[in-house]
Image (spheres, rainbow, N blue to C red):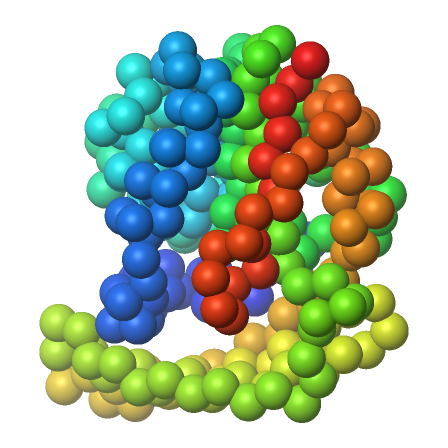
Length: 242
């Protein structure tokens, strides 16, 4: 994701939208904690890559002694820092960041991995993740859809009102080659500023299971488990660094 879509430069709108849609950050985070502890009971340090506005990190903060986050979007990190005062948050590209320390767990959630443009970028990113993992460290990646289950011509819509601000989002997703092309329109209305509109274009790669397994191997994780996480969700990929 080299060019940021407008939604990632409108962090409060992003936060309000997913709050209004009842995104289950707390439940998702508790599930990740369970999976990490099952594989590394003594894990005490966690890095969340593509941490966004820090909602998952807020839950991880209660379970780990040390947490950090990385995200490409400066505006998302601005909101995350308000939510997590004192937590180290870094602006950086998931393909190449260097934090100068390692962790017992690295997570990359909410299908952010799909923004990588091709398999080579996927391998590069997971090598970077692996460099930040201790031996025995747990790598958790929430993938985007694969060529086997990607839907084309999908339309979705939401209207939410949070703290007096109403947000309408309509999206249309089609398969183009090895990617999902998603166009999303936003209308944002508030009593103070009236109504404004912006449009997002997202290109999300449809990586195969084999490509993910190769990427985990590139990260020093020889085996990877795929776990189902419910209808309409792309599942989780989890492995332990040797």
